[in-house]
Length: 598
Image (cartoon, rainbow, N blue to C red; front, side, top):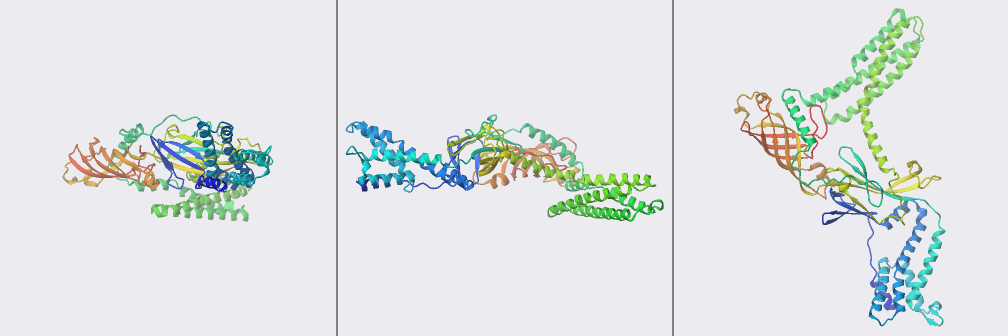
């Protein structure tokens, strides 16, 4: 009998593989359900519904890594959960055994209860506390333990096992109550990041009280230009006409604007000359102390150094190439530091000369002139310091994502929902390539602080498991785009009266197109960087530069998210074919309009 029971237990023993992550994400798109592995590219359909399933055992292990003193409580709670789950079958089994066992329905109830009980033991594994305790009880039962007899009659093994499991459960609960009370909480947040910097909280059902965003479904098939694209096309038309009317090189214009931002050397040269004149003035020099003269010479040296630095910057920028970008930023930083040094030396110099008697007029004139130049040099770095502001903005967004307001729910392992639901169509306006950041967070209240406080200074937050999902239209889809192309007719020499084409090869023209694209689940590099497209385009070149746009159409290939394009076209108005290429940067440069693909 014991051998039969052991074989029955072993037959129901199921082995389960360990979870690699705490959160399992399942995507539902239409009728198709797809698991999103944490180790993969983490690309999800932009219009799908996500189910976030929590593996509580993996969660416990991660929490214990950060709060080791919770290990005892978690171990006891795991045993309690197993015992309670196993004892869910006891009423069904014992009720059936008290009934008529010759009745088929009663036997079915008994068999279903026993099968459920042993199935559960098998799923927990032979090393689980509930399995070991049940096996020990059965061994004692078949060894005729004195407790197997009541009023001289041997009780059934089921009654014996369930009775002692209940006693053990009560003992475990008593022991758990004695464990030290360590406060913690677990929360989960979602945050939308768009390519244009806009971002916001996203509601996860069961985990927060944020409101759902307005319903928005990213269309798969786009065949018309958006209002923003139409406006961009108008701007490109005006820019193309302006570009065709001038011969200025755009890159040279960029360098010119960059150089214009540098401090004026005339100011530094004049300040140095004025200080020198002040020192050599016969009516003044006799009244100057050695300390004043030394400080004046130090100030002259400071000006000479900044003049040299700015000249170096100008030389470097004039020969600007992609390899010298970082050198430029290093030089700019030196100029800013030198300007600050001039300001400090001038402050000391000004304090010394202001107390000299008898030459107040000369002192005031020099002070005003040099002070104005120092101010110009000190204000030089303002434009470049905006970059620091952008970085600070990203930092603020990161901190905001971690801070937990009253809308974010807090849980322990015991009361944490098993699943969360995130319908992307209710997460706000999105575009292909936007990111959804998920964070499973462990909060540990600081000593002496209220565990329920929403003040981020009152608790430490630890990222237990971050996810960064890319939202993408998967499979075939269409998108429109606008951009600036450079067009070159095949037989320009045969065109009469087109003087512009005799002066140069390419002419600018605005262009718009309808593209067929493919989104991939297994390659972020393809979606983020390559993103090729093929389709038809229309453009309005002005080969005769008379101000009246012609009509052209043709085939176009794009790459790198429509930044690069190449096409074969036909100018219907002038009856001439032409080829074209475009470089449409997704940010603004002097002379190039902004192009934001749909």
